[in-house]
Amino acid sequence: MNLVAHIAMAAAETEHHGNVQLETFIFGVIAAVIFALFALVTFSYRHVSNRQAATDDASHGADSHGAGHNH
Image (cartoon, rainbow, N blue to C red; front, side):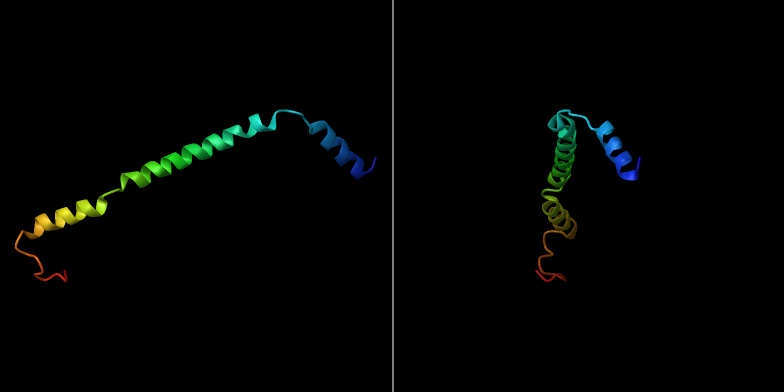
């Protein structure tokens, strides 16, 4: 037998006829879970700049508008 015949026989032996959609469904589930986690991380950073601005205003006092800062 030559090399081509061996490759063809090996390919025929490993061939199976399953439900490809069912076998690859887990990849879609994993991707959806990862994107949901990324969305939660992104959502957790909402209003961070507003909290930072409120902290800065409280630490500088009420009478510091324009004093030393380019507002």
